[in-house]
Amino acid sequence: MAREEGSGGRGRRDRRDDDRDSEFVDKLVHINRVAKVVKGGRRFGFAALVVVGDQRGRVGYGHGKAREVPEAIRKATDEAKKSLIRVPLKDGRTLHHEVRGHHGAGKVVVRPAPAGTGVIAGGPLRAVFEALGVGDVVCKSLGSSNPYNMVRAIFDGLANQQSPRMVAQRRGRSVAEIIARREGQKGGETAAAGN
Image (cartoon, rainbow, N blue to C red; front, side, top):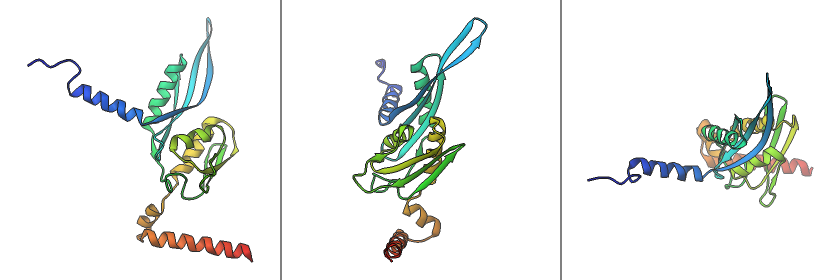
């Protein structure tokens, strides 16, 4: 019995790969034209910085260089999909706690925000949060405004993000104890501010 072309296991696997790729959103953060001086003049190339995420807590970034812009973007997207990290989100819309990240001279401070705040972040940082699926966050970039350093700094901070469940596992306690303690600390801070 002859099989029709494209109806085998390989065809199914290709379709599954397409489905997996379609779940990701990619954002072009920065494109840079670079020149290499050679004997006959200058050779121009392009460097692309891309952020990829599934808008449900997974995000990654990649850098690609090529002679043409689309090829540089494709290389950067492939690298970004290989470097995905999972970030725990609170209620699927914001972060659990404030984090600080740095890379080189780039420093960022990220704070969770109440519902309805939106994404208050500039340039490259906004692209990261949109790909991550965060709807309410306040972020401030300090130091370098280089997009590469800013993106690396935000990923450094997001890698340190922990949910109450992760903290409870590490300490050998229940999630309810961790949350109750956190609420108790917030209450104490408000009482101290009122005095």
